[in-house]
Amino acid sequence: MTVEAVIFDWGGTLTPWHSFDQVALWQDICARYFTADLARRHAAAIFAAERALWLESERDNRSATMDRLFRQAGVTPADGFMETYFEAWEPHTFTDPDAGELLAALRDRGIRIGVLSNTMWPRSRHEEVFRRDGVLDLIDGAVYTSEIDWTKPHPEAFKAAMRAVGAADPARCVFVGDRPYDDVFGAKRAGMRAVLIPNSDVPPFEAAIPDAVVTRLADLAPLVDAWHQA
Image 1 (spheres, rainbow, N blue to C red):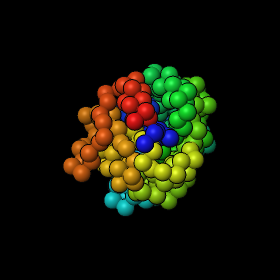
Image 2 (image 1 turned 60 degrees about the vertical axis):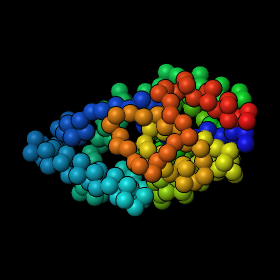
Image 3 (image 1 turned 120 degrees about the vertical axis):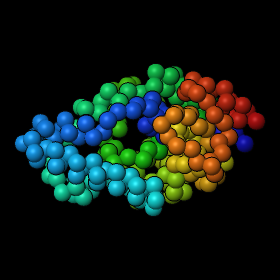
C-alpha cells in the first residue's frame, strides 16, 4: 500500500536526543526567582512532580500540562519564570539539520507530514521551535498531548495524529520515533508501520518490533520510497 502520511515524534527524533541534568536546570531557574532555601525546595518539588507525571503517562497513558505540573508541585511561577524555563531548554530544541530537506522531499512525493509528541508544553512553544528552524510550514498537522487526554502509546493518541493530517487508514501511515515503547509499540498497535531511530538513553521494550531501523533522518527517504512505490 502506498504511504499517505509520515508522522514524527519530536524529542529525540525531529530534535536530536540530548542528555542533561534536569534537576540542575530547575535549580538554576528557581534560584533566579526565589530565596536560596525556597529555590532548593521548589526545584525539588517541581522535579518530583515532573517525574510523577511522566510515570503516570507511562503507566496509564494519561497526559499532563505545565499548569498541572506546578499545581502538583505546589509552586506558583513568578512573572518571567516560564520564559526563563524555555530559554534554558532552547539549546536542546534545535531541529535536526536533515529534517527540512527530508520533510520537503516527502511532501514533494504527495506524502503528508505529521507530528505527535508526548509533551507538557503548549502548542505555541513547539510551533515557535519549528518556526525558528524553518520547518513549521512543512508540517501538515500536529498533535501535542498537552491538548488531549492521552499520551503515546495509547491508540487514541495515534488516531488523533492521523486525523490531524487527514489520514484514515493506519496501514498507509508511517510513524518515526526514538522510543521502542511509546513510539514503535504504540504505532504498531495502532496499525501503522514504525521506524525506530535508536538512542542509548531510551530503554528497550521486548514487544516493540519496528518495521525498520535508521540511524539518521536522512536515511528515511529511500525507505519510505520503497513502501510508497510497493
